[in-house]
Length: 358
Picture 1 (cartoon, rainbow, N blue to C red):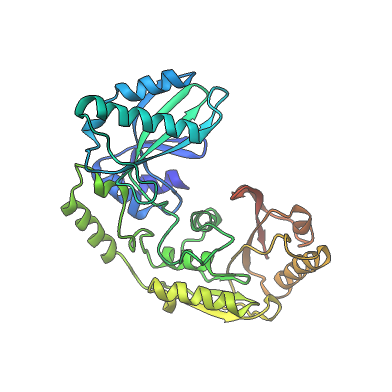
Picture 2: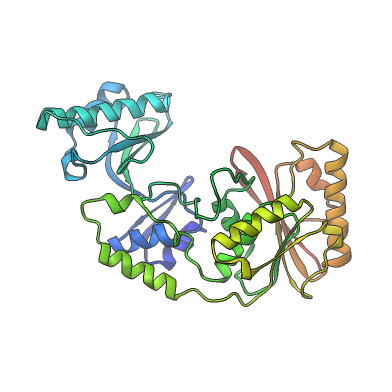
C-alpha cells in the first residue's frame, strides 16, 4: 500500500523492504510524502551507511561525519535508535553513543556542544542497526505521521490511524461505495474513510514537520504544496457510517470529526449491530471488534456469532472486513473468508479477513 502511495506522489526507484519502503525523491516529493502518505509513520533521509560491530566502531564512524552541514549550535537535537542486532542489543545505549559522538565532534571543532532536547528537538537523528549494518538518517517527519490532529493526548484508541488507513486501502474501498463500521469505538476507521473519500491529505492540519528546521527548507514550495492539497478536497460522494453500543465512544468520534471539519461527512449513531440497517443494497463493512481482553470468553463468542448472523441476515451484497487477534473468536463468525491478511495491531498479530456476502 505504501509503495503504491509513493508512486502516486511522484517517488522513483521504489523498493519494498521489511516494514519499510525506500525511494528516491526531490524536495517536493519529500514534502508531499509527509503531507499525503496515509500508511507511513516516518520519512527518513539516510546520511550514513556503514558496518560496525562494537561501540568504538559506531562512535568513530559517527564522529567522522560532517554534522555541521546539517546541524548548528543554535539548534537542539535528539537521537532515536532501533536495533535488531547480536552486536548491539540496547537501543538506548546506541542512541547515547551516537549523541556523544555528534556532541564531541562539535566540541572538537567549535569548543561548544549543541543542546539535546528529547521533547521538541529541531532535529531527530534516527539510528537503525540490522546486525552489523548501521544506517544514520535525518527524520524529516518529527512527530509520527499517525498523529493526524483529530485525536487529543487523552483520547486513546485501540487502532492506530495508519493501520486503519492501510486496512481501508487493502480492502479495495476507494470512497465510491457506502462504508459502515458497526463497532466504530472512537471512530478511527470512519475518520480515515472520510479523509480518503474527501481526498483530504492526512497531514494537512499539522503545524510542524521535521524538515521545517532543515537549513534548506523551502517555505514557498511548502506553501504551494499545501495550497494544492487544500484545493483537492471534495465532499464525499458516498455514505460513511459509524456506530457503537457505547455512547461515550460515539461522542468521542463525533468530537474528533468536528475538530477535523469532517463531521458532516460521517453518520454517527449509538446502536448495537443487530439493529443496524444497511444504508444501501451494496457496500463495505470494515471493523475492529473487541478482541476479548476485557470480556468473558462466553461474551466474546456470542459477539462474533451474532456478528456473523447479522451479516448473513441483513448485509447480503456487502463486502465485510474484520480485524482481530482472537483467532478462536473469528471461527465463530460462521463464514468462510475469501481473503486473509496478517497484520499487526501494535504487538498483537491479527488476521484481517474478507467475507463476501452474496
